[in-house]
Image (tube, rainbow, N blue to C red):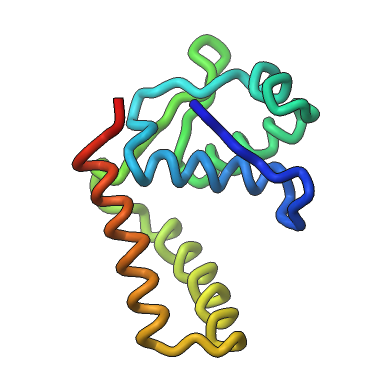
Length: 134
């Protein structure tokens, strides 16, 4: 798994790791059953503290994206083809979406801008799933 983080970003590193894993699952780079690097290995690769990776993995586990156990480590639990989400996941996602849309409104994005950009991102996810890179 190729993971890029920005150490100078205002977004916490654990959140960047979480976001990159979710994006990799959304585009099909990671699918259900794929293993993630151990927390220590990923921390060593990124030159960060393993507790930071552990925090990201714990967040992904709570969100139902991965499962973690001592024998198999972190494994992708679900992808976009795994059926409908649980109600609690949908409610949390909508809460975060509301904030993201509010940011767009505050910065002057029109409804058409938001819809066009959303469609563009969703199309990119669909294209990657349909045409995975080797």
